[in-house]
Length: 246
Ligand code: FPP
Image 1 (cartoon, rainbow, N blue to C red):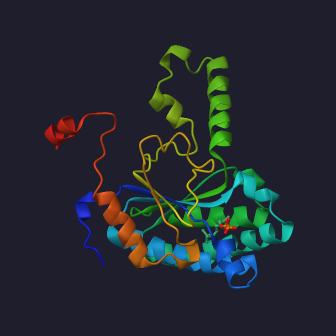
Image 2: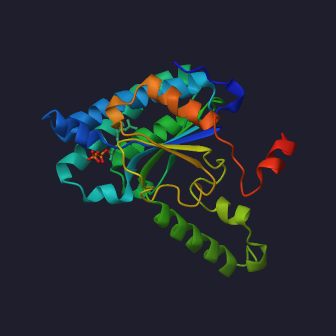
């Protein structure tokens, strides 16, 4: 495995976990089996990211658009999520990980919401990695809801339009309080953002791998992180300016 420099890891790693369905179909299995195997990969990545000292891990677990999948797959995914949240909370406590959720919680079934509320409450005092699950999440939906909330504050006289800055607007997003991701991994060979963290990914380094999510291993994670460490992040500046800054 490639050695990783602990001081050059991403502070915030975001992942689009894709390819569960194809993984299953290639093996003549039901799509839900792919999601079940995908949940095992989630466990591994959460454990590794926390061990490595990554502070924020955000996983795209269910998109606003995923509701249009066959009802049986949606139900099975919701059950899987609920089971994962309930089963893993004890481990999150042991590993000092705090649960967080972004997305439209109101769309989720009541039992999933209850499990989430319990897990968030129970882990609220943890000071290690923040594990954010994006559930019923869509970047455009998040941006338009933020704009509505901000407009309401302006109408109520709580905010002046001239005081709206990038930071003020960012605070209205579901991710208010979280730093922007430094690194995004997407599995399964698709090279799209698919409505994930549209605002927050402005300067994020992107990494795409052909591997389907259920086959994504520790080695692959380390390879991706080693790739991140080899990159120079310039945020619009020149190479020289960056060298002088560090
Ligand atoms: C994309 O694969 C994956 C999803 C829509 C769901 C992700 C869910 C998991 C990894 C399991 C449960 C999650 C947690 C947090 C425990 P796809 O079905 O779109 O694959 P395909 O593009 O090959 O059809």
